[in-house]
Image (cartoon, rainbow, N blue to C red; front, side, top):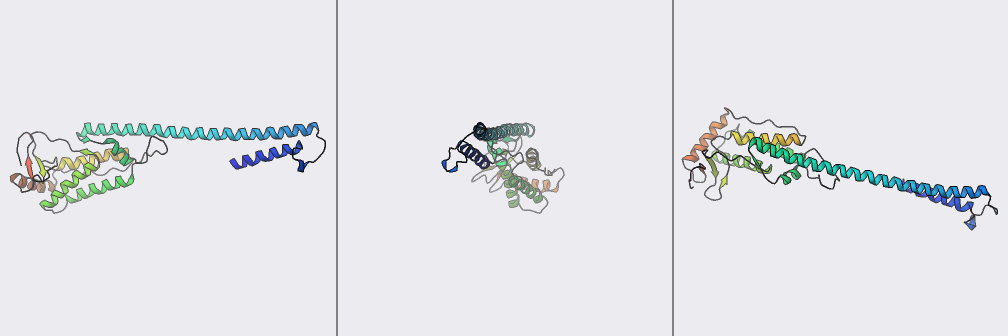
Length: 258
């Protein structure tokens, strides 16, 4: 479009030059009439008008682009603030603890930025899919026969998934026994007690709140009330409580050394 405007301007100037006999090689007549003068002035004026119109169009275009950038930047700031408020709400309702909230936001919305160049309200599909698959694997494990070492890995998988969502499970009550894995080398505080129901449920609840914000489909949480895995897990827990070469159980209100 700019090229067309500039070509039009050049032709109009060229026409004006001919009318005024400015171009010696293209003199059409020796005498210039009033009509020729008016026509020449009109041609040059038209060229200036065309240039002014092109300049105004460019300014208008830049203004529209700047307006879009500003709008997207405003959306980004509002969106990020809403996300932080959502995390605060989840923490208040479920008693979980979020950390590095901004990192979590950029994990889900990596292209959003202050510059306003892009804004996306839908969460990163790869992350959403990965979390869903990992939770599905956690649920599937409860339907299978498993040994104690497998349950160790399952508990770590739950902890790793919560860490991927940048939150920690609620602190246990002072009178609740808590499981520590590999306590005699590099202790892992699991915040798992005698039942695995709460951590597994919280994983789904936190995930579903975040998925709703990301405009993604929710998952089905596992409700372990009366689930056979609870009995299997309790046997595992009590064996550790009775004495284990790698793990141990402690009650926060009691000073029990491993």
